[in-house]
Image (cartoon, rainbow, N blue to C red; front, top):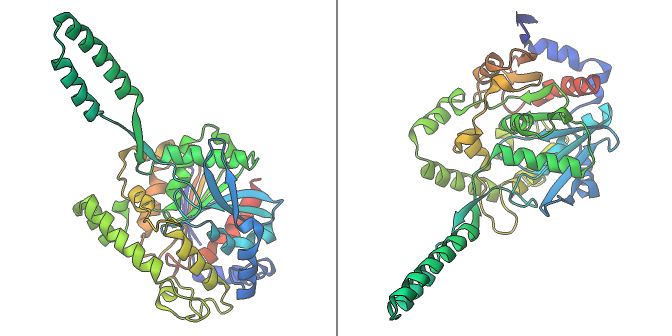
Length: 395
C-alpha cells in the first residue's frame, strides 16, 4: 500500500493482492454480494421491500429497507439509471452482518414516488381581457370609462399575481435535500449515514449542503466512483457536455432509456444476456443468479414513471448541470469523506475523484482509496466491507 499524504487529505492505492488477502479473512468470507435466486425473490416479496409512506405535504414516496431493521440507519443513493429503491436489496447481506438498516427510495417521479420539482408560470387571462376591452368601448361616459379602466387594471393585476400553474421543473438539489430530510423525519430517524454510487454522490453532497439540520448526517460520507463534473468523465461525455445542445441530449437519452427499459433481459431465461455482461453480472461473476434477478427488477422499474412510461431525465440533467443552481462548491462541504475508485474505470476516470479530493474542504478529512484493476461495475465488492465496518465504527 502506497500512501500519499497532505494535511487532512490522503490517497491510498490498494492492490488486487491486498483485496484478495482481505477476502481470505473469516469476516469477509461471510459477507458477499452473491445470493441465490430464491433469496432474491424472497427479498423482493417482503413487505418492507415495497412500502409507501406519505410526507407531511401529502407527497408519496416508495421505499425499500434491507439489512437489520433495528440496525444503524444508512441511506444508499444509487447511480444513473439505478433510480429504483430495489437497489438496496443488493446490499442486504452486508446490512445483516454489520447490523445496518439500509434504506432506499424511488427518486422523484420514478415508479411509485410522486414528482417534487415544479416551477410556477403566470396565466395570462387573454380571453377575459378581450371581452373587457369590448365592453369598455360600448360605454358612453368618459368618467365611467376611466373608473372601469382603473378597477379592471387592478383586478387583472390581482389575477396575474394569484393565478399560476405548476409545470414540471428541472432537478433542484435544494428541493431534493428538503425531500430527503422529510423522508427521514417521517421514518423517525434522528441520525444516519449516507453512501452512494456514481451520480448518487451529487445527491449526497446536495443533502449535506442543504439539510436544514445537517447534524443529522453522520460523517464520513461514503462515495463509490463519484461523478464530480461532466468534464472529469470519459471523452465522449466531455464532448457531449461541451458541444451538444440540451434538446438533442434529452432526445438521445430518451431513446437510450426506452431501448434499455424495454429490453431488460429475463434473468432466468437469458442468464448471459449482453446487458448482464456489460454490468458484470453474468454467470461467471454471479454464479448463484440472485444479483441478475435483482438487477433486472431494478432496471425495469428504475427507468420509467410507472403509469405513463415518461422518461425521467433528472440524473443526467444533474450530471451535466443543466440547472446552474446545482453547482456545488466542494470546498464548503462540512463533512469528512471516504471515496473508493477503480483504476480501470473508463466511464468516470480516477481523475474525477482526485479532483474531488483536491477541492474538498481543507478543514475536514478526505480519503481516496484507489482499487487496482477495478472498473465502474465491479468495484463495489472490493469496498463494501470497509464501508460497513466504518459505519459501525462511527456510530
